[in-house]
Length: 349
Image (cartoon, rainbow, N blue to C red):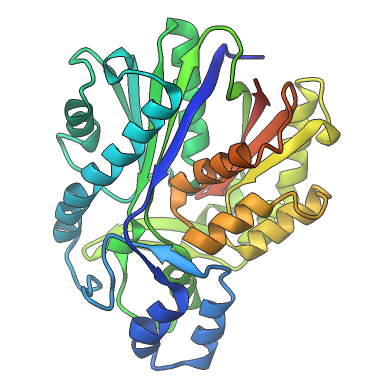
């Protein structure tokens, strides 16, 4: 069922970037003792360029306490988030004072007063703006957060903003021989992505049509994000793509069928690029044509995996490419700890 909310503004902001190979040669090769297996994992991650609020070649945070990392998170998150939200508001033609709900999703930093309060103040939002923080859901957080924000917009008839802001480079861990740590260090990067949702009649942008979710609790330990004394530590099993392969087609087909649609009615696929193998599984299981996941591969190449912000960055590329015709549909999809798969059905206005 159409919620009566549409995405009218999209924008993202990233800190300074560095070439993937430079990160390997300038820091990680030394950390892993020039191990050839680690080098192969690094170079097969699918990224060419990544952005971070810290460059490990200059500032090694791997031994920092969690408290020190959270202090740095607060310092870096506010200007980056402000840039993304301000650009999304401009894209939507909305004044900050008209925002009814400001939601922030992050799994990489915490503090109170939160960045939602600080950003609302700095952006000039009303002191009566409602706020929502979505924490520690991981890479898929953008989709349930988008659903909750869309429900507010439809129910209250007021605009809302969602910001997904992730700084995983602050959680660099000491080098180990564990492959999942090499994969995490090779994939993750920093970004802030914001969307503005407006109520009312259909118009330019994407209407939020429906949201679906599935969690396979039997595989919950395949992907973890644990708070430790030296930051947050990723646990990542190589079996994750196989679990996704079991569920992705059924979840997508059920979502589409519930709205009288099939895969042939979908022009655009905004799939979270959790890694190259993840995208290969999705493309194969959904029988997508060549090029259908170009936006996802492009974000992976240019930015890496930026956790919850990533799928919104992919959606922004889809919009810019103009591949979804008016009245046609797009599917945004992301996955993370649980193992959990979330998908949103969107219609182009």
